[in-house]
Amino acid sequence: MALTPFASSFCTLPTLASPTRASVGPVSSKNYRSLPPKVRCMVATEAADQIVRRSANYQSSTWEYDFVQSLTSKYKGEPYTARNRKLKAEIRMRLANASKPLDQLELIDTLQRLGLSYHFVDEIESILKSLFDENHIQNTKT
Image 1 (tube, helix red, strand yellow):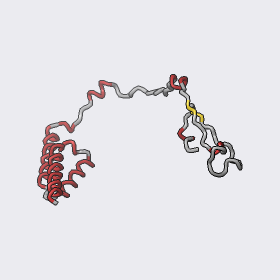
Image 2 (cartoon, helix red, strand yellow):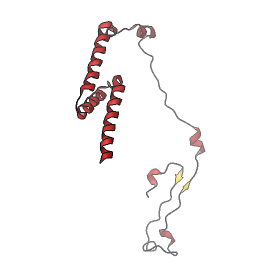
Image 3 (tube, helix red, strand yellow):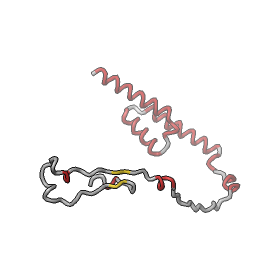
Image 4 (cartoon, one colour):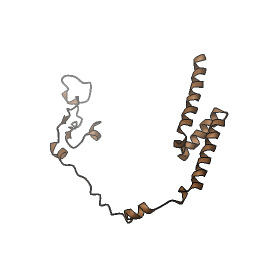
């Protein structure tokens, strides 16, 4: 029956009796065996009250809290932040100087794939808005 896979443990779906000579043929008032059976569903209060949850059994961390807090990164120094600012400025310049819309979209796609697009949200939004506006104006003229 079509509903059988969707029935849970609290629904009872009766099956049709095996086909007999009386059930073959067109449906009529005399031929009651060919009518579809009724579906009976009941609320299962006992199963709804008991929620079974797995135990997590997490092991404690091998790293102490003070040790983790004492870790430093050598990439936080001034030379690295200056290089970071320089690279961001270069990308902003490339976004602004891309002449073709396709080049702009490819650069935006690359930044998103690299996971760097959050640094350039304002620039990306302005480029996409200008491309949309240009396309919208061209479509309304025709």
